[in-house]
Image (cartoon, rainbow, N blue to C red; front, top):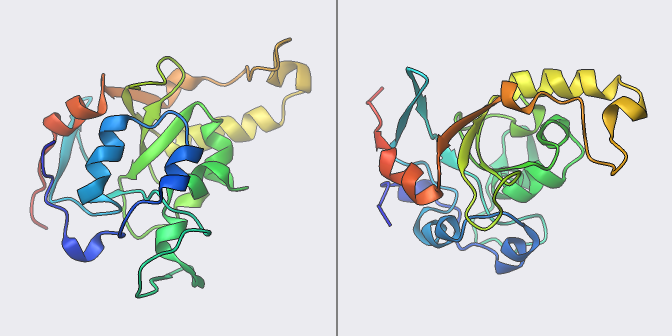
Length: 200
């Protein structure tokens, strides 16, 4: 697959196969691509969405707090006792008790962020995600609008249980389409649409 020219200093080391096994809805093409792009910041990451420009700033990692991470330890700027590779991970963003995991509602699986060096668990940084609601084997790529999604999650939490869940215990009362923007039918298609980032 296409080389997006990640800065080698930003790569996170090897992926943890245990973590890959725990996550459902990952594109096989994405997992293969992470062999050379894991946690990296690509030089080719610019895309158009609705007439605007978006930039894939950093891939999320496929590790967690139990993973054996190669040295050196990389302290996270918000908590220097945690390695940033475990904090900037797909697993942390989907399994944590924080704003981002609550706002994602399990229908979306993030794989990259549009802003690097941020607190990704506070639901204010837009993420690129696999949309597992319709297709789990090779899911489409969408842009998740974090602020709008978090606002919907806050409103949802104030609803009664009968307004939050249907008879089959599926989440209702969430306007998914208000904060999910389709980008590409597959991860491979998404990678092909990326263009070089402009220099800052």
